[in-house]
Amino acid sequence: MDLTNVDYREKIPNNVNLTEDRRVLKALEGWHPGYLDWWKDMGPEGFQESLVYLRTAVSVDPKGWAKFDYVRMPEYRWGILLAPQEENRTIPFGQHFGEPVWQEIPGEHRATLRRLVVIQGDTEPASVEQQRHLGKTAPSLYDMRNLFQVNVEEGRHLWAMVYLLQKYFGTDGREEAEALLQRRSGDADSPRMLGAFNEKTPDWLSFFMFTYFTDRDGKMQLEALAQSGFDPLSRTCRFMLTEEAHHMFVGETGVTRVIQRTCEAMKAAGITDPYDIEKVRKLGVIDLPTIQKKANLHFSLTLDLFGNEISTNAANAFHAGLKGRYRESRLDDDHKLEQSTYPVLRLIDGRIQNEDAPALSALNMRLRDDYVNDANVGVGRWNKVIESFGIPFEIRLPHVAFHRHIGEFAKIKADVAGKQLSDAEWASRRSEFLPNDADKDFIESLMQPQWEAGKFASWIAPPKVGIDNKPGEFEYVKIA
Ligand SMILES: [Fe+2]
Ligand SMILES: [Fe+2]
Image (cartoon, rainbow, N blue to C red):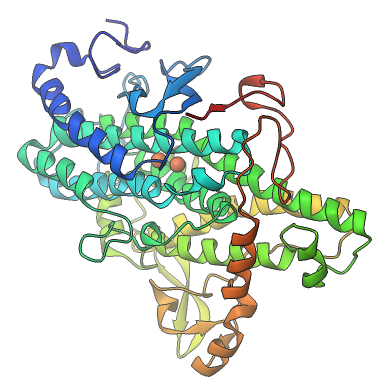
């Protein structure tokens, strides 16, 4: 069987030879109807019958893995695709460094691995749930299509994790696969597992910030899991990363286009002071300080996803060879970290300062540092746009102690520069840093749908190029 091209003979496109794996095929076919019910209940609201110009993964060949065509979302071919098996791959870190990777789960690591797979899996449907109302206010058909593309791929990522659960984790795996369809983002009784995935994504600027900042956490987690000594997990994550790149593209270019439009409108109106918010808003665009506040919110919520700075779970997962560091194989050290240290920003005697911690315990901190560096790259590109208009304003990521709910800084209040504030100061200054009700109302007032092919809402610039090189007036969604 050709393991590069997807097998469409079965209901579930795959390159894992499901035809011959009757047990897993049956389990997945059994899970499929529940998944479709979930998609119809919790997927994009109001567009299930529309034809959307989507890419579908048809292979894992880097040169041509996707094909584009109009699809009704419930008919999307969610498939199971693993990156090709690397011959003679060895475990790249931890106590088993250099040993051959595992094709089956070592018994002693079963529970830890299951937890890692379930947590990753839980985030995928959560974001679909968070974004389900956005189609109605899409600023263009191009953006609407990108939203739905992200949504169907998050659905596929859920499939990817459910495949691992069904194939490798027996009865527990089946139960976890069911539970992934039961939890709901923001639900009081059975919420999604991680905080940021229970927040609302109320408007399109939030959507772009979410795909920029929170999907990037996804990228970091997938990169760390792609290092895993459990080879099927590694291969799954490697292919998911191919799709994930587009999600962050949607976020980065989305924010860029919002900034671009704001700057154009300011220039045309002769406004030079970016803090003249009233005047800027009258132009029907989002003022730069409000964009900064949205970035503050989504960045800080996302930092919480990295967990506690000092973590025994992270140390154990690394030591056991289950979850590595960001791009582990490119790092130049012993890959065991038993003797090394890593500087961790902590709250010591009430002051925020660095302290060397055992490197194994500091792996969450390290992944978060890598994340912050990665996130800063796109912010630099946003600032280039602002600079090109000569507007004196710079978007900056807030200090890691700002607005935290998990880890070292959960117990303090700090401003965006990391200066500690009393509860009273925080209460009175909060809306300097985070969107307040007036900001939210203003953004909401702009969220008017623009569904005419080739047109864009007042507050966002058109993209530089179309998807799949389509021309500007291309009808990305045929609304039913
Ligand atoms: Fe995903
Ligand atoms: Fe994503």
